[in-house]
Amino acid sequence: MSAPTLSRPRRGRVIAGVCAGLARRFGWSPTVVRVVAVASILLPGPQVIAYIVLWIIMPSDD
View 1 (cartoon, rainbow, N blue to C red):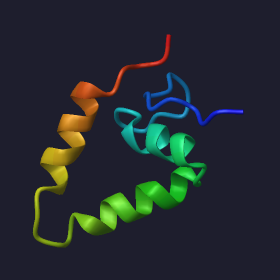
View 2 (tube, rainbow, N blue to C red; view 1 turned 180 degrees about the horizontal axis):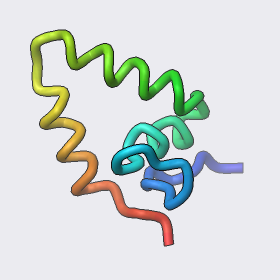
View 3 (cartoon, rainbow, N blue to C red; view 1 turned 60 degrees about the vertical axis):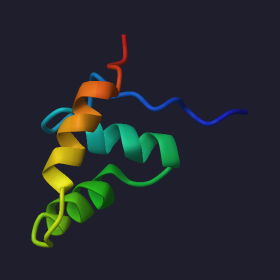
């Protein structure tokens, strides 16, 4: 059995589905990925830009 592909799900999205897609791909809880993403905003760095880039390049489920 292979790992799921990296894509944004149609169901379970909060904003764009990036965190849900990453969680599904790596077998993590979407809530944990979302909490880590929000907490990382408090640190300096390009987190928002990375999220937007992933939003653009990750395909959406059909």
